[in-house]
Image (cartoon, rainbow, N blue to C red; front, side, top):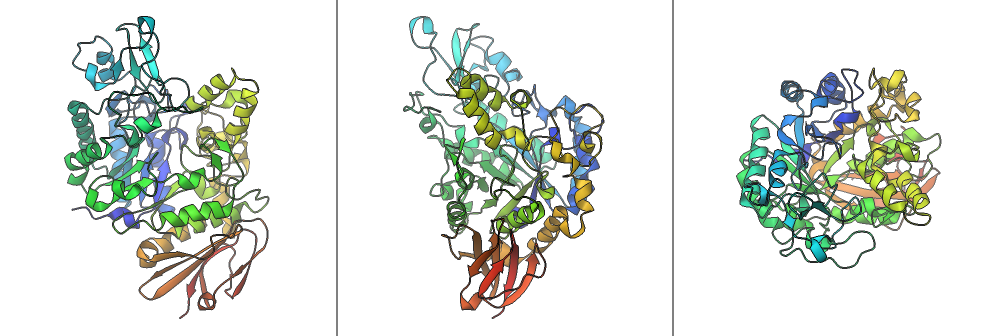
Length: 554
């Protein structure tokens, strides 16, 4: 029986390539993670989500898998993995793997066989179609890749096209084929039999495509979404995978939820559905972006209205809480504006604002020391999506300048610069040449410096926050009530359970703010504060980025 352990967990996400390098080749690896297990334990988290570590040619940093049952050469061996997993479990830390099941690498043996001939048994593992036009040299439809350009690649050997919703080296699997679905269930069982505790399911909402693969309606950026995002057989496929794998273990699954709105979420995560346990809702991450790409000014009320809405998921549904991951830029600056000398206050304020809500919090590596975005030159971007954006933009008047402005705010590379351990050589990440540029901020922003910062240690504050949160019934199951969703300076809400109430206030501005409270919330004591000495009154005078949790007196 599933214990739903994730409802009282804090998850730390590791991007292995950028976390810690043990052998000096400039690439993070499993032995590097092993060397930092005590650090992770000390942070007070009780689960780790590991971005892909499977065998891969690395066209998309491991999200293009060539062997689901082996470890990427740069990361180590299966023996290293077993040692890492054992070390996590000995420290009370669960492990969530990344499941990439919408597509494989074009170097996976399935695809090598699939493209070898039209009558190969693996041909139907992928989505092949004849082209349009004279000699079939036009793509089968107008669908576009998420990385830009057509979602189809012509294959000379068999004279047909294969679908790739991402890079051309990431061909989409054909989930209509029962053999493919069995393969995915067997892969999940392989890892959970080894002791893995669950999966984060990459672009899982893309697995079911509309029969006939019709043209998408016109869209200047991306076409075809309505025919494959939460497609016609999506629920059937996920339920089947749950029954054939996940439900047999005390597991946790969280889906990357592109296309799943708040209204659709219960159909995807309600416990009675027996599909996914949770999803990452991205609506709040779009409140400062047009079409998820073009930046526009952050407005707190727009942000808090979305967060508060997701707090009202019906009984039997569970939420996730996050501001950063490997696909998102850093949260400092993005959601706080210019924090100046108040980086500690801004970083800890964001932690309080998010982690006191109902749901499972996710902390991305470096977030716990307040890492920030990097200033890249065009040639510094390594991400396949950024390179594709520049390639397309260069063909449009002023396109490169627009792309440059967007990527400065939105690029995935911001989150992928190496972890900053020290102010020493290569930020203590590696003794060799790092696989990608270091953020110059490592000279002042690093683990070593933060741990020595005393009252201004962001790490220490996160640690206290996790200790306060885990096992706290009010935070786990308490009612959530927002206070003023029109306020563009302060996010305030209460959490109540068993006759007890916590008041949470977070000033998102780098200036003082006054916040009025109803009389029944005006008396109590601070149990968490990023300033220390926070006091409660009907008219709260909050300092720049001040955040506090008060236990209300009845």
